[in-house]
Length: 333
Image (cartoon, rainbow, N blue to C red):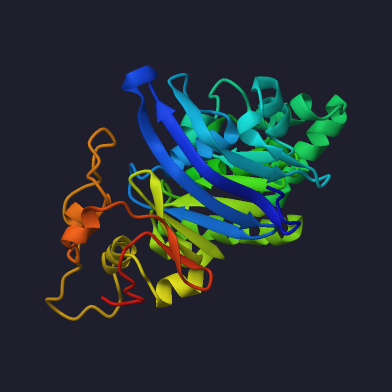
């Protein structure tokens, strides 16, 4: 299938398993979504829903026990050619990471090497992917630190990770991800470990850089407030599958899947009256080794009916709005 010119990434029927033979556990079940050029798609869901596994599959960074079972990961490179990432070998993935796709990981202190300066670690990307001199590399590193608004960039390039604040370390991770001008940036919970003030600064920075660099972003989060602030499109994941997908305004105004309704109902709000409580989603995400028949969310769903135990697939309920539910709530509480 040819990827449209305005689409940077098209994931079709992605299935990922862990283990071998009869012991294989399917962690992703027929995940499909598209991301437009210069747009942001948010993957959202509870821990264990499959968001990070999806990003690792795209980056070719699944652990040795994991593998892509089926599906296509069509990525449009800067020269306009389309490559199926699922078919790349290790060398192909290494060439793609950096100039094609980069990733910001959730916790910078576990991602940055404490034995090297941040300048050396950012510059390593240039050594791997571009033929530049030492002087050119140092100049580019400082320019990138300035781009992500780190004061005293030349001095900070010589700092070690532990000498920087949490917000600065996250800016270093962004600089590392962007120094090779990727077409697609994957951001895996990039603000989770930050306080709300620094989080707002990082989100503002990412929006600005996206516009300046004409970059697409796959933003992984569990925070629906961040989704509302960052995303153009949203794909809601549950138990390894996409259960709802829509434009961000449509999703918030006309929520069609009970799981998404539950996520929104559990968000703290300014309009709560005295004594009113948030509505949590009961239970927890089911084990991938013991998924219920039919809709995986049915055991936790207040709307569940006997027919919910039959197989259900992601279907278009309205123009551009898909939901994996036999009912169409269209925003009902």
